[in-house]
Image (cartoon, rainbow, N blue to C red; front, top):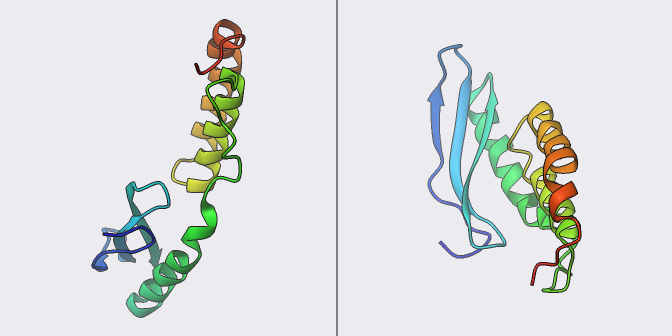
Amino acid sequence: MTISTFGDITIRVTPSGRFEARTRYRDWDGQTRQVQATGDIARAVERSLKSKLTTRYLQQPTNTSLTPDSSFGDLATYWLEDIDLENRISRTTRNLYERNMRTLVLPVFRSLTLR
């Protein structure tokens, strides 16, 4: 798949009786990721998924200024922003990642550059 394209859409019924539409999407960074939507009506779920796909290209990181001289802290900030844009993990998990980065990782690596 080329960047900003998606594969076949599959729709299945979940154990709860709701519909789930899924497809693979080639993101701006070349990675293929699963995108999904759920709802009560199959056609509506497919439309919802296609709507998500039409705005997916807007979710690329805005900070692309990392260089070999950037600090590890800058990289951590970039990583957390990327997680927020993907919206693939729960808010609680994201906050846990941020806390661990701030309290465990950055105190040791803060003064290092990416070089």
